[in-house]
Length: 291
Image 1: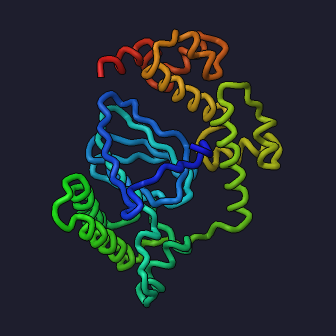
Image 2: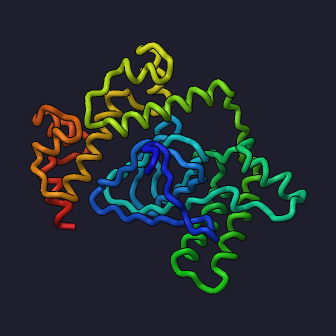
Image 3: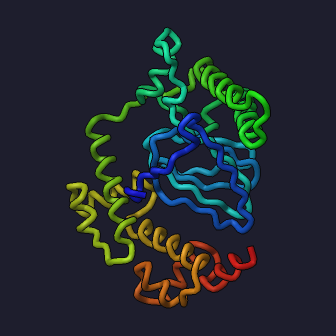
C-alpha cells in the first residue's frame, strides 16, 4: 500500500469493478482503522453489531441494518462481539454508459462527479424504503457468491434499481463541502498517513499540527471532529492493531512487540491492549492460534 491511509487495493477485476466482502468474526476482534478509498462502500450487518465512525460521526449498525460510505470519506469499522457483515465495494464510474444520454446526465453524472452523496445512515430512510434497498443488496451478495448464469448483468441491474429507489425517495444529499473544507480534509489524510508510516517512533502533537498548518489546540479539536478520536487515542489504537498483526502472525515475544509498535513500557502496552481488545496480548495470541 503506497499511501497507508489511502486504500489502494483493486476491488473487483479489470472487467467488473465490483467486489463483495463477507466477513464472519467469531471473537469480536474485527477492526479496520481509519482509511478511505475512491469507491462507494455499502455495508450490511447480517447479524451481530458493528461500531462505525464515518467522517468523525460514530454510530452503531445493528443486525439487519446497512449504511453507505461515500468515496473519499474517512471511516473506521469495529465489531462488538461475534458478527457477520457484508460490504459491496464498487467504483461509481462502473455505472457510466458508453453513450451519453439523459439518464447519464440526470442520474449517473451527479453521483460520479460527487455532486450528490449517498445517505450514510439507513435511518434516514423509511422502514419500507430500507426494506426495498436491502432486497437489492441481499440479491447482489447472493449473485456474487454463487455466480449463476447472467449473475454480473443482474448485479448491475440491482445497482441501478437501488439507485432508482433512492432517487424516487429523494434520499440523495447535496455535497456542500467547500474547497477550504476539502483542503483541510486532504491535510488530515496526510496526518493519518504520517501516523501509519511512523507509528513505531515517537509522534509529537506539534509535528501533526504542522502538517495541517494549525496550532496544536485547534488541530486537536479538528482531528477529533473529523475522526471521532483524539490524536493520542488514534495513535494508540493504530499501534494496538499493528501489535495484533504481530501477535497472530509471528512468534515474537510480547515485550519485543510492544517496543516494535511504539510502546516503550510493557505494562502500559498490556493495559492499553486490554482496554482496546478486552483481553491481554497473551490471551489474544492464544485465541488466534485456536482459530
